[in-house]
Image 1 (cartoon, rainbow over the protein chains, first blue to last red):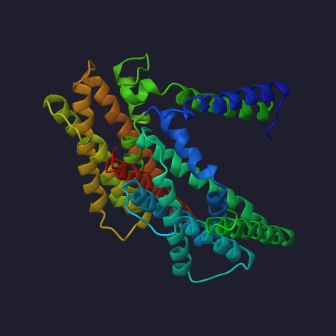
Image 2: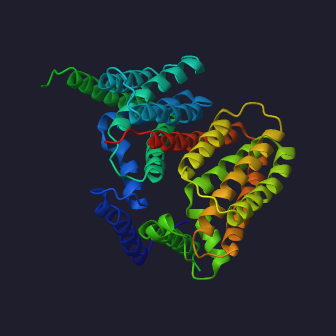
Image 3: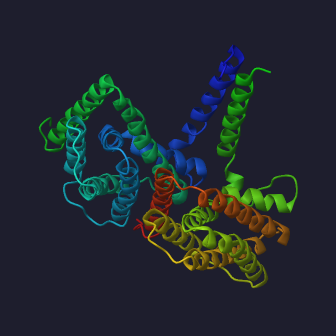
Length: 205
Length: 208
């Protein structure tokens, strides 16, 4: 049993304050050090709502599908996202990146709503193709001068934690009300996908 | 003692330690770590903040563990052995490497990909990789350390850290038989490969 006293809460608060305040001073200028690269990489996938929705949806869908996809989807996504980011980094063009990202939220959200169960290969292909778009967008937006290695570590961990969030939320499906919650979350993802798709097509310009 | 107090204190200590590691990284990333307890321990500390070395050992150890007991038994001996030979070579021969990051990224990509895909490998493949990557990282470490005022003891600290971590991870992995555990380890491989690929692509990033 974990018993938190007032003193512990104070220490925890101080520690959190220190963790979250220390890197922020270096976010503005990437200086090639750990703090110049890691926070930039970590926050990059988390900073865009379209990315967040899709990556959480991957986790939600994986949790609905169960083993082995619950692990295989988060295995495929960062790998293919790194391929996309590498393409973006070296300047290899990919068409309709914004539409691809928005479509990923839309399609993955629909998969969650309907608890779709395609064959394993199809689910991996779907997630892998969408991951390319997400990675490419990140690759073309990487900050100049950041530590490449620490940026990469932060980037991959940030992405993995978003999947883990989705998987964690997806464990609610063991209860009937939890399944409804997941469908509701899928609906939110779809709504976000539609918004971002229309936005990328210039509807709100 | 209330058990919860102990757990919570350990958690706080861990949090504080992580923050300290992240708060003072410049000495670790640019130069050798100064642990304050001698060159051997400087080497150990340096290994754990050298991401290329650390992740390469993690990926290869998990790969050898997934490949079974025969592969792991050989791997835990050849990795530190090759690393030691490489370190001595790098330390004694005045080589200069401009492509250290490129080589490090490649070893992460190769080790991570093999771990993530995990095809049916001969038990000799992880052993061969242990020799190749141990030699390569050893030479890079040795060459870098010979260029500083550190002693060979620092290099031995790095070798010892790589060997012990390889042994612990290999032994922990070889006993993992549940399917979900083995797939979780392959997820780690995909993360390592992704880091290696991103880091590699960064080297080819157009400038200007």
